[in-house]
Amino acid sequence: MTSPKIAMIGAGSTVFAKNLLGDILGFPELAGADVRLFDINQERLDVTEQVAGRVAQTLGARPTVTATTDRERALDGADFVINMIQVGGYKPATVTDFEVPKRYGLRQTIADTLGVGGIMRALRTVPVLLDMSRDMERLCPDTLHLNYVNPMAMNIWGLARQTSIRTVGLCHSVQHTAGELADDLGIPVEEIDYLCAGINHMAFYLKFEHRGQDLYPRLMELAESGQVPAWNRVRYEMLRRLGYFVTESSEHFSEYVPYFIKRGREDLVERFNVPLDEYPRRCEAQIGGWEALRTKLQDPGAPLEVHRSVEYGSLIIHSMVTGQPRVVYGNVMNSPVVGAGKLIANLPDECSVEVPCLVDRQGIQPTRIGRIPPQLAALMQTNINVQALTVEALVTGNREHIYHAAMLDPHTAAELDLDQIWALVDDLLAEHGDWVPEELRGGLAAD
Image (cartoon, rainbow, N blue to C red):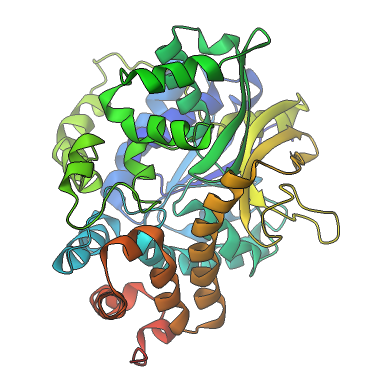
């Protein structure tokens, strides 16, 4: 595989696509890659195509770059498919995920992984990913699908139940958080050794060391001192309670558990500095800055800086092309091979887990972790329950499991009663309309 064929689906996400292209084309062995850019938004696709040319020029690379709104053309014969779509976009889908729950007094921060927002995002995203996977089965059955799309765990699980395409879910929370903790401790992140495992956005550092010295006592001292970064109070509080540090940010984590956003407890939101409605603010800022960004990226006279990111995608591609072994963190099924045993022994067979994976010419090879601390497994199980029921609804078409998923969601249950949860799901499904599969929109909720 001298010049790999790489399809980038959702390439209209220009900044993210630029970073991934810089990572890929920065490797001499990948500098001549056949890159196919696909998006349904022609305007954004055109910008990314121009940016791709400038990235290649900056790096002295000579890829073949094709931009297309024809998904089959992009996928045909692809060795790697990088997925970064957002089904429904900020408007109407994300706005609906936030505004409808507010009518019931349910507040959220990010709403893309768990909770009613995560459930609805899965209902509209997994069917699109599955349809795409059917195309892959016809056009590039041996491809490796690199999924960056949330809700990560539900997407990976939903695809594993319904397609033979090899998929690994990629997130940057493990490496980003390691860097944040290194900054808190004043230690270069490249000097830190860590082992992390769990589920996406709720994985924990089982080991965090500097030159053989356990760093957890220092992190615990920082947590007990009360001098932690204001934006990270939630995670340091969970460190105090669980003894381990979680990978995903405080704004994300605060809505995966019932402890920080509770009706009638505004003191908790203030004490732990929980940024309610954070994701809509980010989206508005990104939309507001798009025109300026496009002008800057398209200006041939403006210097274009290309720096290697912390994303794993290019490393995986490079290792599979060259055979250079690496370890990355990937989201895969807990029992990736039937009968081969579980990667994390005290989590269910059928769930998506995030673990270190060896990658070389043989592809993604997940590491078996064994048992993780029981309090961590128990906390993860509260999220896995929601994931399992949402996936079951998608696979079987049984709408009732959507209510069950919302009913068992830790944060939703902390704010709403059962009648409210049922009514909220009805309203969300109605307002999402055609974004949700027809069999899940029909019928009435049980009284």
